[in-house]
Image (cartoon, rainbow, N blue to C red; front, side, top):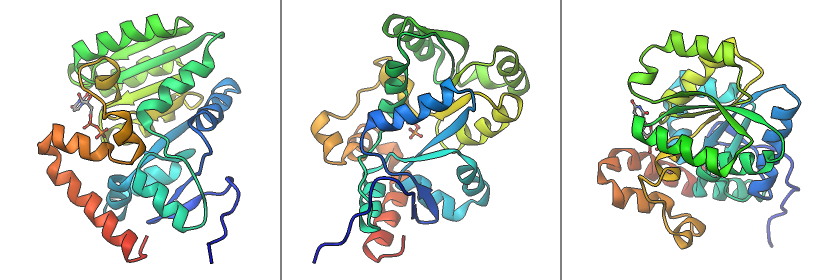
Length: 248
Ligand code: UDP
């Protein structure tokens, strides 16, 4: 007998982390944009196998993730775990989500901050954003190296500029921990951690082909492109083992 699947409304707890299901990328972006437009702000975190395992070991990261206002299923394994817990969801890739939010925001000005990546990658990201989304005004742009060395100065800049959307692409968990600091001084902003998304958007790194994305194999593409990520893959194996053993 097939398992009953509940409607797409309730969070499911995966390895101690509550995750919201979504029927589409557009629905997830729409929810974020609503919070941006009504000025309540927020903090969206991409949940994947690596983050679930990190949460089990690092109380600080776990607490940060719990305090986010939206946790979405960025990993294929998380989508499978949710399905086993009785809820359907699409996979919402963080690399797509921020661009879909900007697409939906077209027609009305929105101010943004872009923080992270190499200086040349950040410049290329800024240029492409200004061409793709003329309504998006880049109020703050700081690279993830010398540009983020002085966190106090950056925090101050955000407090003054008060951008509607703050995109932080520094890798996890650094970006999430920093976002918590930024939210203290600018709570009405909406924050998203983007990992390596600026590298992809600027064209410096290739994204997995669509067929791999659709089959949940984006992680394999990244692993083959960057074998130095091998240590991180052990977390994915741990997640898989817990999934198979029903311990998520
Ligand atoms: N990065 C940065 N400052 C640092 C280390 C990394 O800005 O000190 C950037 C890096 O250039 C890359 C991103 O952070 O653009 C991390 O990408 P990764 O693919 O590791 O992130 P993930 O999506 O796996 O969290």
